[in-house]
Length: 119
Image (cartoon, rainbow, N blue to C red; front, side, top):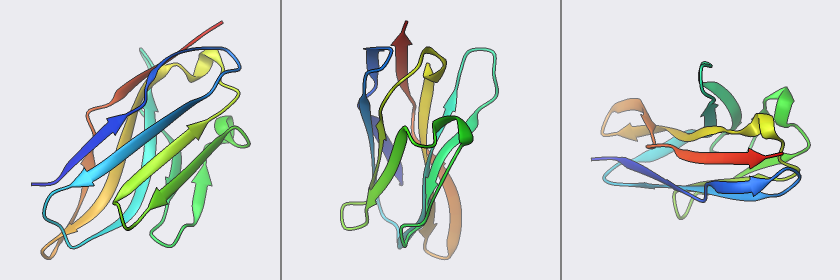
């Protein structure tokens, strides 16, 4: 069974930094795209950043220049370095990965980690 476990959320003041991490575990063949999404209260879940297996990245306009996504393929982890945080970054952040288990490629989600930015 594949699991994604996130860590690193918390409370930070506006302008501060946080680093989120997500580790994939279980029996699988390979991991394709990995990414971070977020969902604020009353809003839909939205893409924050995504990284391909060969390191290409894409960011939401709202976080460009402030957030950096990275991954360690040997450790099956993806991280999100968040700098210059703003109150509007407050949300539950979810890790997502496209993982090949045997011959089936599926999307897996973490349980979410709360990020709260105070003004």
